[in-house]
Length: 196
Image 1: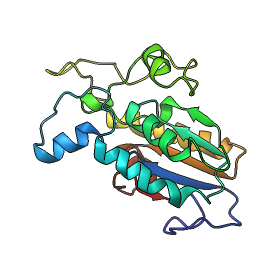
Image 2: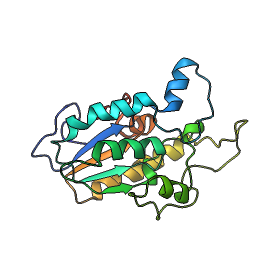
Image 3: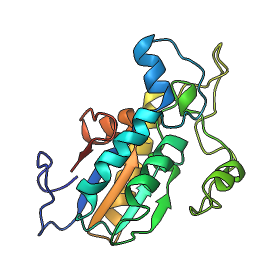
Image 4: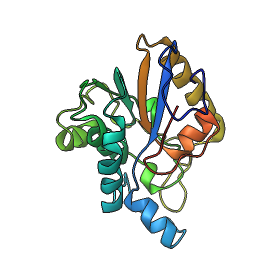
């Protein structure tokens, strides 16, 4: 997505640089590492470790000339974006984009209504989101979850890529999710890892 995808630093003369940031560790991530069974943490928030990861990453982004932050509407991504950029020197605006959500595979990937998100995150505009903005089509499994087909993820990622390329900003931060970024970039990002 940037002229030098393997670079750890932002090229100053790039026509457009996309900084991909995976959210910090969530309560789902923590539970899954202990026992790889869905702990039924719907729209899982950051764990204490995740909050610490965000605090530690914040100074490394202070000098990055981010013009806009595009963030998934899932709670762990919103918490990460606000923690990283809420007091950023450039005060970049945040745009909540349902296209950047995670693939629905587990409970953590099932979102919440805009009304609930607005109550928890009053500084972020979520009024444009549909009441159900995550994948909820098809037959639900035994957990009550409608797993998102890979073809749907690939189509959504392609739409998101076009959306990014059409943006006027030169330096864009995207705060989203591991599987989403793998489909977007082909890379696996660790919790709170940032890559261009």
